[in-house]
View 1 (cartoon, helix red, strand yellow):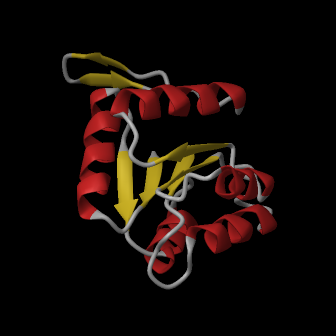
View 2: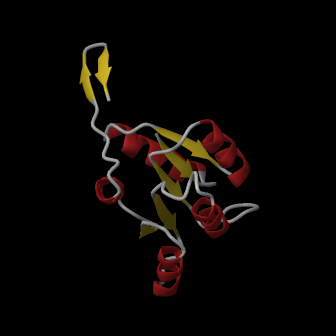
View 3: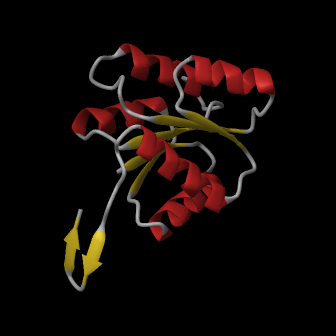
Length: 135
């Protein structure tokens, strides 16, 4: 499951559609509270994280993820409208595994996710045969 933390509904829907078309399951959240509650219940394969969120921002969420032993190893990819070199360096230095600036192309996003999952050893292989699904 890929968790998407994004407050913009149209971007959440675009990401869910693109990832669903590529065979990934997603769950979306608009704030840190609901995200961390879901993370307590089930671990994510990867987190797509916006920086500019209401309440706790994405960089604070990233810090919490990296400081907590149970979540420190979850791959995190930032997707943000903050696209300057300084913004990218700050996100990567805080522990993000990749950073993609908005606006982005859905195919590039999927390709970057595959790359992060390969590097972190969490490649998802799903085979659908009729009603049978092998993961």
